[in-house]
Image (cartoon, rainbow, N blue to C red; front, side, top):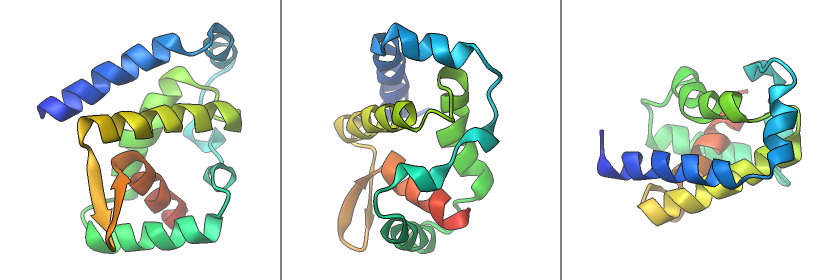
Length: 127
């Protein structure tokens, strides 16, 4: 395991412990399913996100829908109510900042993106 990934995971745990208590309580009150996540509602410019996602998938062809679910949705299933779009957005914003802090970035068509935002765009392109 890379040190960066270990650092990112540790920072994720710390940041999630700082989330408002109601967020965790609300998430714990119902069963979680990956199908609850509506990726389309996470973007203000869905068409642009899908274009970026397609470019990411061309640049990183080994990326699969399964790997995106494992890396993005898996951690969210443990901590969030995926139907609560605002909570998911807050979580992803924290993950994006942590990616940049840990140096977990990708370059797509000259744009430097956090792994999380690039992968989320790829997920949007695939769904």
